[in-house]
Image (cartoon, rainbow, N blue to C red):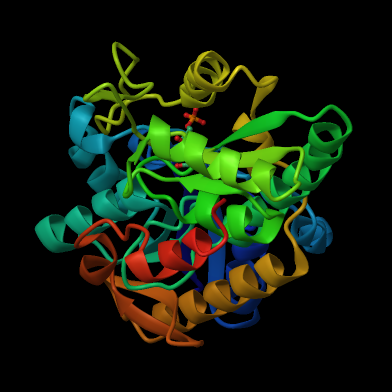
Length: 347
Ligand code: F6P
């Protein structure tokens, strides 16, 4: 009898999820396994809701953004009877293993279910935030960098044509990777991330510095979770926003706040664009497909080796396996070393 493996995607969607799902299915079904999809993140195994994947069309998943399994931010540890329900689904479905593809929250649940309930779970790290530890790059990150960079290229032409200061707000939650990478690639004059709060006067100084050297416009990349210091106070976008079942506050709006402050302080024509969920949409880049496929393959090998509690990772330039515990131990925030590279181009 074939061994049955479940797969789910949790948290925010991103390009690369579908290629990873495809890779796991293609590899495992060549061996002695059947793969079933659980629908909508952890909600799927809680409610024993599955979703069918058509093998005849499986290669189309390589080019499709989002997730064919749907996703949610359901937290079994905040759902009445959630963990017991997942254990029951394991028995009812006669599951040999479960693959969880997700970020910090999804991997955190996977890790707890493995350590506390002894369930055979393996993980694949995804998130445009790139904030999971023990992997240099998560799937979805490279495509989001590409999208944000292209957006900045487009905003630059308007900025130049109208002598404007353009503020671009970029996702990433409490990590500045996405903003720093796209800021460097898109030629931002200032990059502001949660790890390195910046004073309004300093931002103005950089704008002034480029202007004095003949550049009529400025591009400012600001992360949604960033803090601006102004008149001795910390300005963020986070007050009184809804919180999800993992306790994360919904971010967004700091770009508009900065726009108003800069207008007032500099008198320049300032506009703000919030890239929002555009950064999570569309087809994955070739490099993200390669990463997702490679992580999916590594995950399939972990299942065949019964390497439970493991996470596929891209680390030190190669695909390897780490533990879920390594992945969720701490949040991987932007390093000073990378930020300094961006800083060299401020002003
Ligand atoms: O974690 C990925 C992410 O896109 C963050 O960058 C962002 O803060 C959050 O998800 C947005 O979540 P939602 O899609 O629930 O609004």
